[in-house]
Amino acid sequence: MTELERHTYDVVVIGAGGAGLRAAIEAREQGKRTAIVCKSLFGKAHTVMAEGGCAAAMGNANSNDNWQVHYRDTMRGGKFLNNWRMAELHAQEAPDRVWELETYGALFDRTPDGRISQRNFGGHSYPRLAHVGDRTGLELIRTLQQKIVSLQQEDFEATGDYEANLKVYAECTVTELLKDGDAISGAFGYWRESGRFILFDAPAVILATGGVGKSFKVTSNSWEYTGDGHALAMRAGATLINMEFIQFHPTGMVWPPSVKGILVTESVRGDGGVLKNSEGKRFMFEYVPDVFRAQYAETEEEADRWYKDADNNRRPPELLPRDEVARAINSEVKAGRGTPHGGVFLDVSSRLPAEEIKRRLPSMHHQFKELADVDITAEPMEVGPTCHYVMGGVEVEPDTASSVVPGLFAAGEVAGGMHGSNRLGGNSLSDLLVFGRRAGMGAALYVDSLAERPKIAEADIDAAAADALAPFELEGGENPYTIHQELQQSMNDLVGIIRKEEEMEQALGRLSEFRGRIAKMTVEGHRQFNPGWHLALDLRNMLTVSECVAKAALLRQESRGGHTRDDFPGMNAEWRKKLLVCGLNADGSVNVDEKQQIPMREDLLELFEVDELKKYLTEEELPA
Ligand code: FAD
Image 1: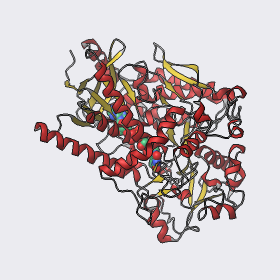
Image 2: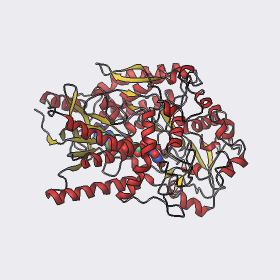
Image 3: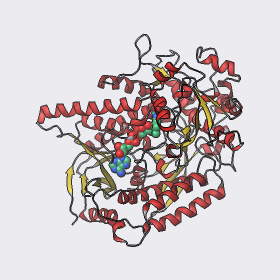
């Protein structure tokens, strides 16, 4: 029998970013004993890095904004592949979730008349991102943590124990979900510091583990983004959708090499920054695709006027959705018009006074000064695409965030559907709040509906422990760091921003080799704080998600959002109707099935002009 500590809860939330914390608050408020488990320190989740803001159609900066406009923008950004019900709920509920944060103690930047300020971002028709300078994620996490502390204080009043109903297990990594028959019965993991095992006995688990960026070499993502939740869900029998869609943010740092990939927030462009090539040309005017032509300025004069008078001018093309801008930068660099370090120039220094730049973009000013010795108030930045966000994730039911496995829920970046083939900037923070809350409610309702608690079998615990310890059992195998580097390089080179059939075939060949090598890798030392062991366990997850990305990308024979095929350059309306659904075979390899999208509800379809719908939908999908 495996030696471990055991805890019993109603709901276990895996992940302490925005989605996990909002879910946990909801589950606790619904009266459920809730645990929050996170593999990093509490407060260090990826959400903390979010800079630009949280999209919500509050209409503070432009009273023409409303949920319908936000819905339309989100569907356009995702190239109509989004789960329309999720996009609807998101657009409708985001303003309330932002207000709610202020009731928890958040303080967003203000308009001159005292309302929550909202800034421009790519693909959003109006200034829509509620923000706190360029440190919005920090305020979001700080506030949610504060709310958790206040709930714990209430619990102390009632029970004499702060952690009676809501407890955080930080630096604790979940490696397996456990089931009783078809239904979730708990989660198994280890403490990072001691390596000792821990078991959570719970009928409901909410995955809020974030993304998968660490499978790619150049990424804005932090060390935690190893696709754990995606892989845990699959091993438990859930399905993933949209895994072929990876967002390459157009502006990551390209120099010096040690910081390559670190994000340069879209707020730089939202606040007036422009992209130029080595010839000094504002090249984005050359890259406005037909589907967006009517909404974007054709001249620099019109684009510049838009910053002061958005109602009577069209938007600058620097604010096209991210996939378009990333591809344009890629093309300029390939055509030999890149910067000395292989990016393009992003210039805000000639557009805003130095003091204004420091006020609006304090983190960017600091980041470039400290990391690249560049003063962005005096000279342009060098930027290029970086792997940033995964649109794909656990297939969930929109209203409750439940997966196909009873008792398993998912919210935030680990969930799929909401953003379709491409996420608009700012739509993640609002997604975390809207669907984090819904996941908390869904899990609480599920627990209430159970006639009896699922049970955990000792044999399943022993199997999870044996799997976790397997890398210690072999001698003379490869070290996980080497395999990780090769995996990242392969994904970057072969399944990156522009994809080709033969390269993806090659990637799949390499992934299958990695599978064999991972099964035989060795870690040195013992279980006490052993990063090599932690990476070995994470690698299995990175391999699974990489396989999902490569297999789905190979199958989808069109280009759409975060999936660009060199050999199939255009969007294809027949492919828009299809979702690619990833599941696991018994041997741990990935299978991908096609599934038809559910057609959009008629009243939502009516929010669009038929001429616009014709660009995305097949003839028979168009309204009569
Ligand atoms: P996270 O915040 O990443 O939290 C994941 C949690 O899961 C962590 O606590 C982690 O420790 C835990 N975890 C993972 N695996 C395990 C495991 N096996 N066991 C236990 N715990 C685990 N979006 C916007 O909308 N607006 C922005 O301005 C914006 N700016 C961004 C800037 C940067 C630099 C980056 C990188 C992203 C930005 N994004 C932005 C995207 C957004 O920040 C993320 O999509 C979002 O924060 C994800 O939140 P989450 O709650 O899903 O996951």
